[in-house]
Image 1 (tube, rainbow, N blue to C red):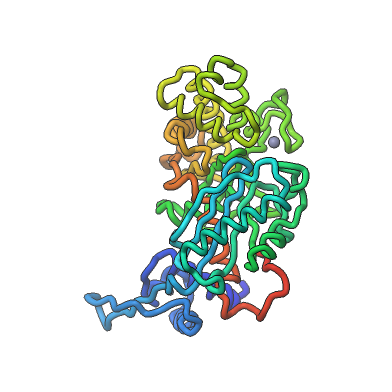
Image 2: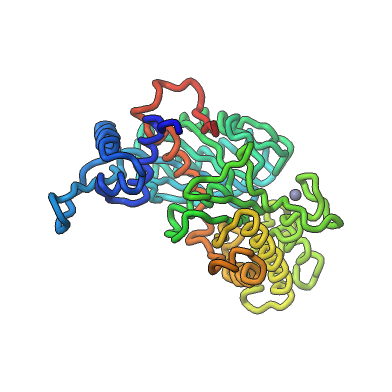
Length: 411
Ligand SMILES: [Zn+2]
């Protein structure tokens, strides 16, 4: 086996310190599998770069007290942006990955990216200005969108929400507007990364079912993001489950997304004029998530017609959770994304019933469906973490003055 590179060991140690807060060198060696000598070198480098500092001593054990180290949380900052047709959010995190500011912003609607990105950049500028953080202390922006994506080129590969989005240079354009590096990440994968960070899960292998305007999925396997061949894995929303079902934008028919997603629920609610009028549904594409939340709110407050629609969506999502568990041998699936903002507990209940009946892992272990700690921002927080964990998160060790926005390589 090839020895890990100096950069890789540095990133690993940095991430361990970020995850565990305050640790000793002995603990770092135990958790990383690296030798004590390597840890000593790596920690010395990280201290020299101003990323890590000594924070005290642990006494009471056998032998001399262990010196504890932690990240300098104020050394650097990162921005995470979750972009969706109906609702977006922006967060700023410190170097330790803690959220220090956040804002919900309008979705991109039917706007072309050339029109909506400058507005998004203004929101990011405003949020950063509000924190008082100097621009040169911001490492970069993690831009989180639906898939499929070409992450290295920084573009989405389908014409959603409008044809102009297809292969538009998203990261290059936003990078030029903000004068910051921008990395692209899938929203469901980012939610999985965010969940791993904020969710305090007791497992290192789990799946995420993500629901915003659409439905996506992500898997963390042994603490690592599962990437697949083209970095577009776990598109659970585009698993066809009814060949005779409605056509989906992806090219298939009867996908999970077109049968169970917010759009499907809203379409069926609009087919019931009495219900649509009672809930004051807008019916516009840009309002789909808001309309869905109106139906969800009615469902959880006892409207029987609304409950029937949301319950059907939740049962189908439950089937998707079983699929995810059986494909990846998971015992834990987390529901994340703004789509679970109102009726999340109902979705958890239905999905838990489904996995207890059909997930094969149940034969060996208890299986769990959990709701994200913060359904609305875990993807944006994950976007910021993607920046912190990338080569951008080690500014002193990076090659001098990259000419183009740095892309995360899957190589
Ligand atoms: Zn599809």
